[in-house]
Amino acid sequence: MPFARFRLSCALLVLGLLLAAAPAMAQGTAGAYSLQIPPGARAEGMGRSFTAIADDAFAPWWNPGGLAFLEGQNASLMHTKLVPDLADDVYFEYLSYAQHLSGWGGIAATITYLSYGESQATDGGQGDLGTFSSWEIAPSVAIGTTITDNLGLGANLKYVHLDLAPALSSTSGQAGKGSTFAVDLGALYRIPNAPINLAIVLQNLGPDIALVDEEQADPLPRMLRFGGAWQVVNKNAHSLIFAFDADKLLLSDEGGAPPDSLFEPTWFDENEVLLNGGLEYSYNTLISLRTGYIFDDPGEIKDFTFGLGVAYKALSFDYASIPQFEELDRVSKFSLSVKF
Image (cartoon, rainbow, N blue to C red; front, side, top):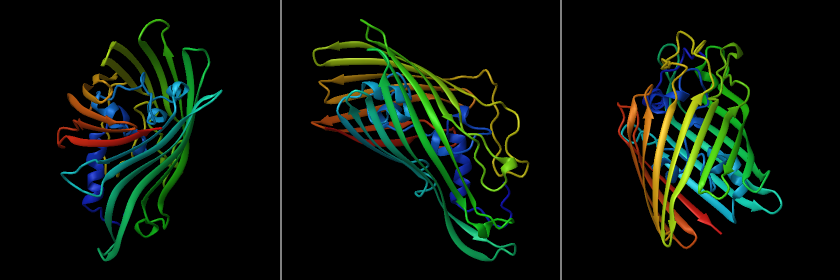
């Protein structure tokens, strides 16, 4: 989608770095980048290995099948500056509410918001046309229900809207806006008489998204994810959980961005899989220490994650330190949750 009449400011230049900083498995031809950012500092601190846990209000993103076993009511909020060393107005927010629904399992509603910051628009003669903001928003509703005592299935239906540039910045006179919808399907299985969960998720299944030219529509970042979780210790006040995730992008490496696109996608071997693993130690449910490892060979991200969680009564605060693409500093992520 060419926009010949506007000059990108630093904020949209950051977008190119942001795409490079996202997991490489979700780069390339995929659009709607807000769908690629994992929510929840707890999950991030565990190396983004949360698919087989998914036991809180962040479950709709990680595995809606986890909602089948949800207890009580949960609300969570996450705010993250994605490239704090480059721009303060490039940030990600995720708000979720989930609750147990008697006879069904669990339901949830979420809102995802991604800000790319402000940019400067100019005409062909470099005349100043003012500034504009670029952003994405994706509200969703989700439900999970038990098929058996140990098997939960769930779905998360999302509406996705992108607003990247106003009409004044386009040679066609059309705004750089687009919308689509998507669904996530997930299953979580609790092995009977064993502290082990297994999970599978199909994420972002839906129509391609186009901003101006339908012929250059981008597919959503459709992902297949497998996960496992093992509660190694659950005795007295001590708990230790080990988890892992394996992700595979369900897109071919054909097509992609048009030749005059600003961003050059990072292509990857179709057999490449993104591998994550993590540990969480909790004492008396009051304090949790977390670490993990992200092995993203195509994206050149091979590093540890770290996290901390503190809980007081119904409130819990979580922090995570996450590695990014080699040209960017580590990023800190924070989330706040309440259970009632």
